[in-house]
Image 1 (spheres, rainbow, N blue to C red):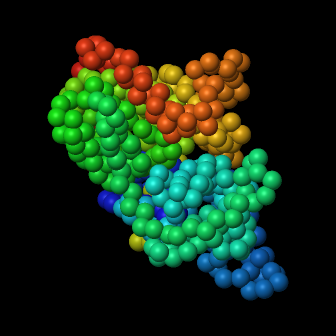
Image 2 (cartoon, helix red, strand yellow):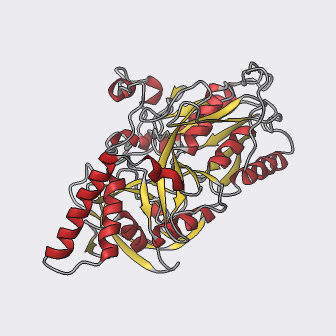
Image 3 (cartoon, rainbow, N blue to C red):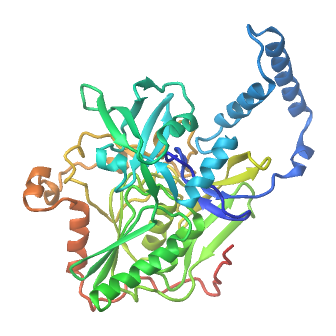
Length: 463
């Protein structure tokens, strides 16, 4: 979750949000099935009767009177908490937060967070926000807000305390592994206007940073590519698509951004509980990059919609994926409205890359692993991924994280220290290495996309 949450903008809008405070999942807003109770059998009725027995005992004998709505909401939260970490109940505040996040603008710190053992844990700060400028990092634990312990609060309650009127001060206490003492920080809330895409030109290469797959991200990406070409006065030599620390967003936007670089072929598929419950999304003709080389940057904070884009371009041989293994969020959530102000966020499917890979747990493995050695805390800071979440869905093909992470030999290309890189003027080693890679590719090299696709493939309709 971010220190705000985004909400659906239409009754059929699909999402790829990743749960934390706005945990990235793939969401669809649909009516709650009224026929669900038809499948209730005698065993289910017995269990419901057992629940009612407990409910009545609490109502009659608890030390203090308890409001019915509090008990029912607690029961609902407990039920959903027994599932995977991305399913949950959205009360009026949570539903409002979801809308706010989807709109892409709110007052806060610019953090994606989750809850771990009752403590708020940072998934990633958003670039150029108060949290990022203050030096909050992935894996940090937030223990106090304005000197008050927040242990025991729900994630929504903690996030609500972090949000607030722009210009107001907030003190946070951070516990970071490897640090002997807690870190005290004073931040000023700002309007977090999640402009989905930022662009810059480095030499003759266009660098496109996707910070969020919020509404209109594809439109912004198209505009950014045109701005790069206008700035250069020509087509760039190549493109870098930076998806690092991007926790996800709308599924439609992940499909749209992937499509900008593809002529044809599948982008992603999602598969539900039933064998025939499969939906596929295909690219439409037209590669806006004209076949120019593409490097996609990912890290452990790249999740859900980011993994859809990276997986699609990697499987279609359209881009070289570089950086570090991604978060591993490969499930789809559906928003099921219960009323005008409340809803369920329920995991209903898994998504797969064009080759049929599930990124659940394992994430996207880069073609070229490049550590962020310009970060002095890189080696000591723990990585936080989907597989670290309790009750996460298990990949059908067991993922051995130990083997994935194992690297017996130190790559001689990556032995420089952060101080040595800084002396050379290199602030972002992963980006620097990506630019070097693009520079080594001949501008006359054949396009990186695979030409072969399944015959008869048709573009999916977009809602």
